[in-house]
Image (cartoon, rainbow, N blue to C red):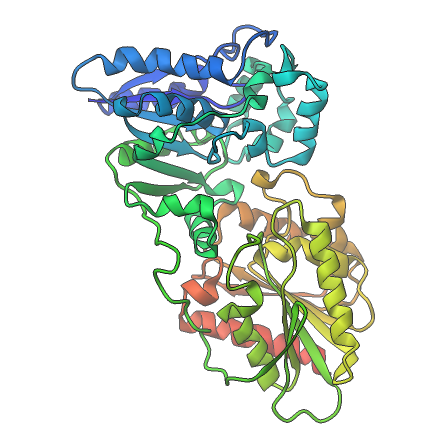
Length: 505
């Protein structure tokens, strides 16, 4: 028999698993929802002497009697913060655990506290403020969020109002020692098969994890082990509340070892650009590459392609050498304008300000080139560079003839935390004036990213912005690489024709 041991996340107790547990039980599984000390939803904790070790002990107290029963295959499931006590317990009972399921959680590392997994910088600062410099919190607690603040801890997409009311009513203060005590791992848990369940309502996807693996992130290379599988759920961060049936079905699939497996970095050669464009030489200066028209006469308009991210600092090749971007730049140059690719420093979601500075500096370097018509420049953004568009949309300079964006992320995803208001394109678009905007929308976009695009388009239409939407109905995020179809090719052609029309007239 499969025995699921379900461990909840921050502020929550075993009650969050009620509906999922009943469905797993109906399917013939044994289920144990762990009550973490101080987080059972029935009392407020002072946090005194409660730390990560306390919660690891809580999980071990459930594992040991179950492991002592013959014929039980233990599957540990950790949601959110809950993966930290799960991994700590699995590290000490690796021989007793058949599989670990990471439910919309981070990847805890030895020596790193759970606080490091909190994306929102403001929340991290609040935790440290409450701790007041006391080691491991020393009894301090973090109050649970108000009803309208759960979104800061993860997308609440799909959670019914009644469930959100109950979550708020039963939430308990989080003992700070559980967030501040560094994880201590021996590496034994690395031998246990694992599954990752990604909730796309927060913007996560298997494709994005694969991309990060392909970038060469060292910490993620272990995820290509054949014993590691992945699943997606089209809902927010709390699937046990928003879709317990789908979650139960997914957990059963994960327990059986099924799911998507990642490809090791370098296992496949990058796909060439999906259009047949000529090979053109480039000129490289600093972090900027220029692709010049073959027969340029006089200064020519320029089109800069701004890569998405975050991209790990150690990623090789760097974005300006990615086939998609070099293909677009050569396509632009073949049509008589200077195509430009660049590297900027968006290595983490906290890097938008320096990345914006990099892009602005690259633009000025290109405009200063005597072969470029400084009064006719366009910018084309991709994916995670979407927030960078706000600077240009909110105060468009007269020489900016068009701004385009492919499958952009137009607001901070729930897993990112809060971004400075400077990087909110939906707020900036009211000031776009007559700047032509082109947005290429992937019809099969992840729910979380699609929501940011709709927010932006709603604001654009309400403000009367000059925006053209080019849809790729059967396209995914990064469709130029993953959907090499006539539909994708036509979308690229149409977008380029539109941008060039604004740029050259």
